[in-house]
Image (cartoon, rainbow, N blue to C red; front, side, top):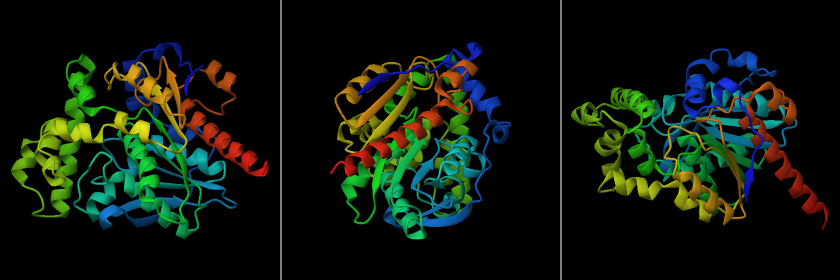
Length: 354
C-alpha cells in the first residue's frame, strides 16, 4: 500500500541536494547530542555469514529486550564512522530493542577478516539472516527486524527475501524497514553522472571504493590484481574491474539487473516499510512511479513516499516534530520504530483474538 506523508523539513532544506549535503557534511558533527539517549555499550562479535564469510559486528542487549533490530549502512564506510546507523542504535536500544550492527562485506573490519567483495545483495541477504540466527543464540530476542539505508537498504530488502528463501528453522525474521534504498543501480548510476551534483559526488564515492579495495589488498596480499585496482576509477569501474568476474557476470549491466531492488519487491512476503524521497538527488526520478506501482501491488509493503527528504537525511522541522510527537529531528528512524511497534502490536492483537 502507498501512503502519503506529513513529513516536512526546515525551510532551507526543502531541496534534495541541500538536504543531502547538510546530512553528509553537517548533521553528524554533534549527533550524540541530537538524541536524548546514550549510546549502548556494544559487544564486538565476529559472525559467520553466507559462504562462511566472517562478518564483524556490534551487539547490545538491554534488560527485558522484546525484539531485535539488525542493520547496516550504505555504499562506503565502517561502523565507527556511521553515525546515522549508530543514532538508530541509541533510539532502538532505549525502546527495548536488542541492536545488531555490522560491517557488510568488504567494509570496515569485515574487510580485514575476509577478502570477499560486495555483491549488492545477492549474498548479503543471506548474511543478514545468518547474523540474526547467531544473534539469537547470543540472547537477542528471536523476533528480528532488518534495516539499512541507501545501498544498505537494498541489502536489507534482499535479507527480507532471503529469510523466506532460506527457511532456516528457529529464526523469526518478522520483516524490515529501509530508508532511501538503492533500487535500480543501472538507471541511477547512468543518471547520476549527468547531473552537476552527481558529477561532484560520484568520483568521491569511487575514491572511497578504491581505498576499500586497497585496504583488502593490504590485508589479503595477492588476492587482487593491483593494476585492476588502479583502473577502478569510477563506481562502474570498481564493479567492472573487481566484482563482476568473481560473481560470474559478463557485464556490469547484467550484474545491476540481477541485483535490482525493484525486481525483488514483488517477491517480499514479510512486512516491509520503504521510506523514499521524491527529491533524492542520487537516484533516477523515474524510479518513483515504478516504486509506487510495485508497492501498491504487494500488500506486504508499506511505502512512505515523501516530497522532500533528499538522500537519507529526513531532518524534520520543529513543527513536524511537534505534529508527530517525535523526541528529536530524525523523522525517518522515528517512523521506522513507530511502524515496527505498530506491526508488533497488531500481531499480538491478532494472536490474542484466537
